[in-house]
Length: 431
View (tube, rainbow, N blue to C red):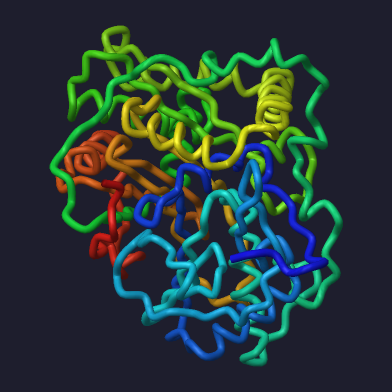
């Protein structure tokens, strides 16, 4: 799929340049957002809302082309489609079916679902796009929204920052010799194993009272994320008894520290390394997670990582190396290298939406692979914490341990609030 004459192409943002290089038709870095509405979704109206939104969101109205040293993005004029959801969570995106778009919008019953290629956006940016589509969907139904409702209107003028590579905006000038990629990679951790699902992935979501979870965090003087990170590490120890350290990778939304309206990727991962032999109880796990997050998630250290990422991805050798060579070594590395994390935990935070949107539930699922067989994600909406595990394996010991651990604290799930598709049919897995 080539570039038309006069059509401007631009690169992926610094943190996303390797996503298309590592992706194949079966193994893609996707994440998934879902909204359960009050009424059954009208597919035709949703499709119109999507195309109206694309007229406003240039960073999502793109297709991928192949450049000399990297994949690039150009404007996409193809009409976008929506698809009936077939129950396969995080199924690979077929760009021939989507018209070249790097996302897929689908629906079934009362649910609207967005699968997003991580190279295009992070969870925060994709959520703004998703909610704008849903706002337009309701507007086409005749519902009016206040200007300050918190959701971008498709009729509003985009700000220049929405398309910026915020890594380049904030990065300090450093020498290539100062880039320590080995330190960013870390050492080999405990890897969880299981029986691969035939055909793909499954998702399971449990709903908890956020106030109850927050109260447990406050008891220990830590944040919601630190509490859930520590609890997750303890549950991994209970179900796997791993001998290596557990490495939990926590995405950090850099917009909290470095103001930006970018809709592209502006996150970095921080590593929490837990040595289970040093932790005797939940309080120990939580305290260790909180200490490491407190030490590493500072503006100064994040700025160092931003600068390292920007320098590493824009160095002359990166621009000079042909794309086919990068792809070859990336694929070889994927085959011979082990994963550098035990699990990823991403907290998308509190989502506050106007009642006019008619959203009763929101969920967030991360991608998984043959090495990272399960990942964990949370978001909070209407006082409910939606806790979602995505799995590439049949075993459900981790989810059961999370239920058990929270039950020991007197916190019981409210799964009845989120009945649709608790157990989805699997999608194509990373093989």
